Image (cartoon, rainbow, N blue to C red; front, side):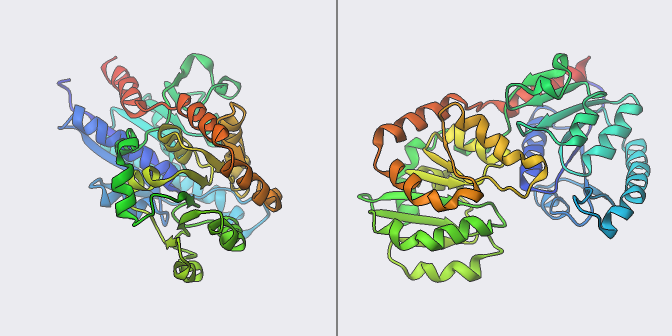
Length: 364
């Protein structure tokens, strides 16, 4: 490709929108080392701090979502939207992108909308099984929509949909061979079952409270626990480090070794987490967060659970945890079936496949 390639990526608010965008950018950078990259995020959101750490420039828009209840913030929304559309227009006019890629989050709405009305090619990477209202609206003008689940033609024009999966960290592709290394890294006992609890980088109050309630019972069943509390809750729950066979972590950096160490996992049901867990292929109990737009975590989890590839525990049914966990712990056949079935859903080449679709748009 001889012409200058300028690429805008927009996505943020959560790691689930940021990391796929970074994975796509990294893959594109390998293909087009002379390309210029610019991220567009929402001011005061985590992408403004995270993206520069990956070596990319980012500009922020004054934008946020609409609150579900009537608040002062909602009254500001029309002004934020107009301001963001105007600033997105200025960014696009100055940067002159060849293509604009949206991975979800507040800022991707104005950015992709302005790009599409200016005739610039746009591509949406939809991580969830149930898309938010922004991507539903943007899909009408987008050139392509890369998805991770079947059945999204209910929301998007079917001719634009390509099933690619969600970008994941490449070091997760083969964690099976890292078991012994993981046991050394976490100082685990080889004769015990390892439960890994992941509530997200910030943490999950309901998941932490659940583990706290049952921690003595869990370890009495020949189980050792790696418990990611999240940085918001670490100070509250780190006292359980004193228990034998329990270790608490604010954040887990080596996710390949974390997954390699696990026999059973308890996890939230964010789209990126699910994509990773499909590749890892271990028995999982999903506890979806009910506090997200359109309850999409429950819908994500059900897309896996309905294929007999994971177990579901709703926050409204946490009192059944002991029975569910004991049933899984004592049923090796069920563990094996869940592992085999979730691996069938894995799409490990997602990043490469998405970049291939971007290349087609750049060339044509």
